Length: 110
Figure 1 (cartoon, one colour):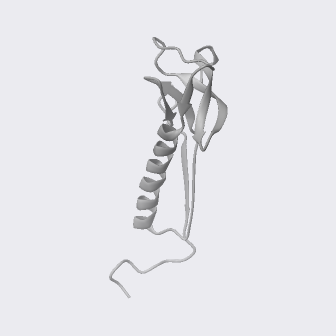
Figure 2: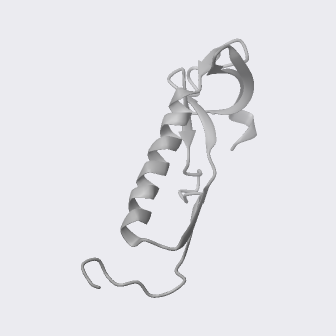
Figure 3: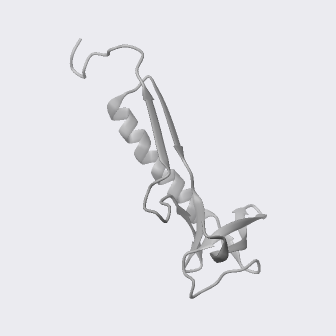
């Protein structure tokens, strides 16, 4: 994240819980500051969508063990928080490790 376009914003986690988060200002024409209180829903929805897609892919390849790591930067776009998974250089911060202990029969076999 570029520190010159970051802002400290208040984030409502629900149930009256508010935390301060450093967020990347995606829309520089509408700067956001600590006086604004934004919902965390956009970030959590993005994380859920990524997890659901990865789970579906892992269900298809059926590894014995899987580790999925991804970094999420928090951005402010059009006055709402959003998860930023892709870095500015165009590379994703997603790392997947799959392990199989032994050969399994293909679906429909054995």
